[in-house]
Amino acid sequence: MQQLPSDFLQALAGQEEVLVSSREGATRGTVPVWFVIGEPGVVYLFSFGFSEKVRRWRSDPWVRLSVPGAPDVSAEGIAHFVTPEELDPATAQLIVERWSMQGAPTIEGLRRTLRDRVHALIRVEGLTVQCAQ
Image (cartoon, rainbow, N blue to C red; front, top):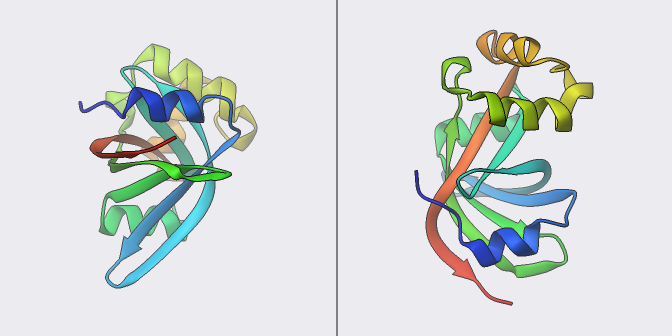
């Protein structure tokens, strides 16, 4: 697993949302997304499984994460869809604490919503560093 740059994660740590840019063919889009920083230096995103952004990430896993208010503080990464079987207890607890109101109030509920593809849990791993402060 490739970590995201530590200086990027430090800049992101105090934020509520991360700006996620993605592409589909020649079309690009950027959306604010809630996130958690997980070990070892990756970012997790949680969204409805049928959303446009999730569809784009499934089509092309490249993403650029940017810190709101600091567009040149960014990192490129690869969106990896986490299956219920891949979900470790520590990460599952982080996700449940952050997004319990979004349909994952327990770890078992989180696993079920991922299994049924109602929601998608995406781990963004590092690709190329593009970070400036």
